[in-house]
Length: 150
Picture: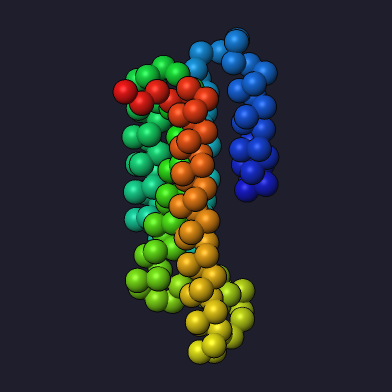
């Protein structure tokens, strides 16, 4: 099921490209919302409250896109995902262990004091990456006039 879901997410941009002239934008928005919620609800390591809140956030986002009746709003999704990744990284830096340390421990690695410092540094690096990625994604959306800021 997860492989099929991953394949659907990979194929989504191609489906938009091929069928955009044949289907209304709201059809793609609904499909995107459905895929995103199912993917989130199947995420095992996440707590149920995180899954439900994430799904609610996706539904609000898709409702805004639906109201606008244009796919341009969906171009903000990479910005939101990058900000979410940075937010999670910052959360784990403020509430140790860091995200990378959690990942290392989840794979069975033993992390000593030096490893904790190292994984904390790597988590800072990822937070920086996600923030820069959000800026570039936002710029791309605005510069290509996909999203208009007034």
